[in-house]
Image 1 (tube, rainbow, N blue to C red):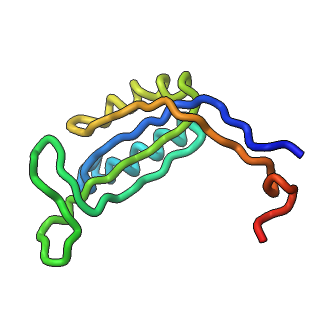
Image 2: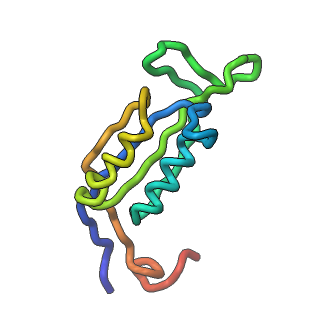
Length: 120
């Protein structure tokens, strides 16, 4: 019986606006597709419900708000080498977005859980 293992990784987070585009395609979608083409381990897009950035305008999903330009975060986790190799491809896309890099640990659990059985 083996327990979970942790390996170092790098988390790349790109903060953009929901209505940002790249050649008539949502920017967040273009980032995900380029990450896939680059062979990165995975990418997820998270839509914010409220936030502000460089413009200092607050964007919100509250009912009576006129703003639909909500914050979006694209999160990619892979080895440091692979994430850093992706940065030049990302630089072609991101103009006013914020990009952060964080050292993280990826925890992998044995298949079926510690006792060898799936969740009950």
